[in-house]
Length: 307
Image 1 (cartoon, helix red, strand yellow):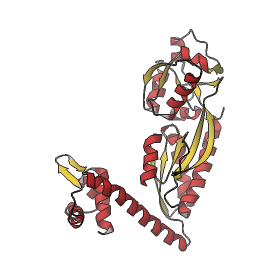
Image 2 (cartoon, rainbow, N blue to C red; image 1 turned 60 degrees about the vertical axis):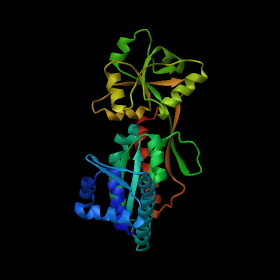
Image 3 (cartoon, rainbow, N blue to C red; image 1 turned 90 degrees about the horizontal axis):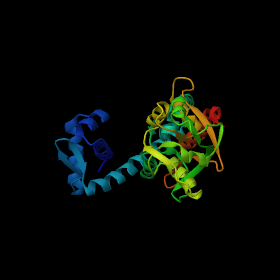
Image 4 (cartoon, one colour; image 1 turned 30 degrees about the horizontal axis):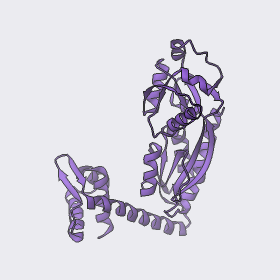
């Protein structure tokens, strides 16, 4: 086994295609195929099933993929730490961002990263909490911004911000439901009278809403489940319902103030935003620098939306 063979296999497995993997690696496809085949011959296992649409992993291939990612991750860390000996913070950093924050954070974070770490590489990935936790464990992500992450021995968690969710309405949604008087401050129980558009479980905001309504022995009126932030806000804008989200999600709209926010109380729906990384994978000086950078950027950009 050598690193080129492992890298070739991992990229083919992740992209599901020899053609796409060869393009991503800048390698001729016959050479890429030879690398994977040499790996299979040496380890006496079949790792990929070839078909007309690409490739799929065998059981042995799934095992090797996890080990291969770990090997490549450790090699990258070694290279980065050797670079740090020369006094340069370098290497590759992958960060997961939730949809509610990606639009707000991606540009200022990228600018700060390039300014302070010109020799390093940055990858930003948008995703939901549960898949991003798995990516942290497997090494596909170095760190991620997650909501309401429970304590776990394999995760290091740094609380960045506590945010009260708000009711989001539009003129169209208010006109369609005149029976409820929308106010700047509203009891949470009043939401039971409103048609809500919410993400499906296990979305952390949805779980928070369901939990608080259960405690109040009350049932929310959920008319639609939508697992897309922009789609939820568009539906609210068109008058098809109301949303319960952090106030900074309104940054997804370009035009000024198409939606209104209403603070909720009795009880408030408090969500915790955390910066999370794997406790089982070593951190480099570059990772430590970037964690501080992410925390500073997040706190700065959400200040304008704090109630």
